[in-house]
Image 1 (spheres, rainbow, N blue to C red):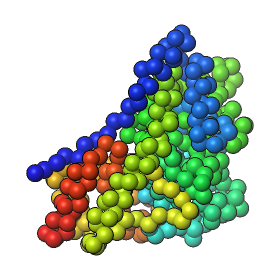
Image 2: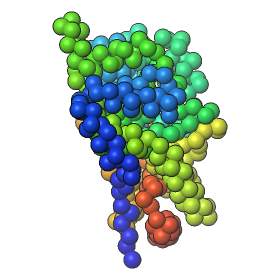
Image 3: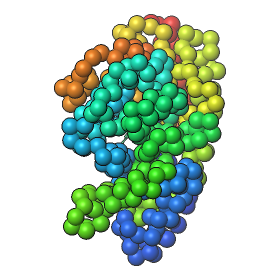
Image 4: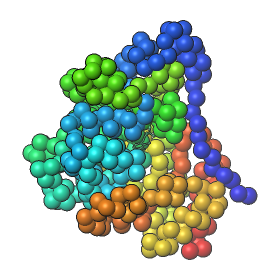
Length: 365
Ligand SMILES: *Cc1c(COP(=O)(O)O)cnc(C)c1O
């Protein structure tokens, strides 16, 4: 029997109660007291001092680039494996995305390629702990410091991911999160930024609140409404539940596939992934791996590789004009991985179904 492994939409029993509290403030806009309450709770959970709520993860990335003084014509380095929404705000800022290759089996920079791509025009770097997988930042931060280039962490997929006990977003100059429906913290649409630097946080707040309409400073409206923040407040404590259930599901899949040629993507030492997605490495050629992913899809098991038409950024139409050189390690990884859903809505029977289907497909290929 074919089972369709469904998407997951999180909710909390406290949602309505918190929305009522937000409504009772008699101010629903982004300057409501309720937003301050939400920002304080985020700062406490993520252990980063200054938090500014934003209307989306994309808005957060644009605000971060603005606050770090990225101007039209400046360059921003990022891994070619980054998803489309990480790169779009670079264009919004008028800057030029420069694509860097990755270290094998990770979503971190290849240091040699990074050094090659840093120029006088480089004004920021972005890293993305994709599917919630921790990245070893140590070397990257050393190199960026030397070149005086600030790091933005795009944590849209890594709420709850820990490296040496610290949340992603704590390592660079600014961390940017999305709270879109699919992320581990969901307010429908929304996002936030966190930073240790008060000056950066002040600049982001002013920028995203129309320059405080002071007639001097430029700004946009990237404010989050208090009704959205209410969902954030009620669901924030559930991030840990998410990570636990996703980890347990990933372990079951790992165990079920142990006697196959499929291996999980390795995990950085002293770290905790949040398993936004469970990434596996496939044993075949590029074409055969593609076939494997399509066969899974036909059997009701979705893959982010298909859903987001995964490819290096420089192969996407919009970014082709920024192509400089091929990133071979990136291409290799994209052609040899896929994701399995491990969200909290998945039943044990669905995990057994996934394992059974994978084993059947491996036999057929
Ligand atoms: C979802 C996502 C974004 C964009 O967030 P929105 O809230 O949808 O604007 C940016 N970067 C990454 C890595 C994402 O997964």
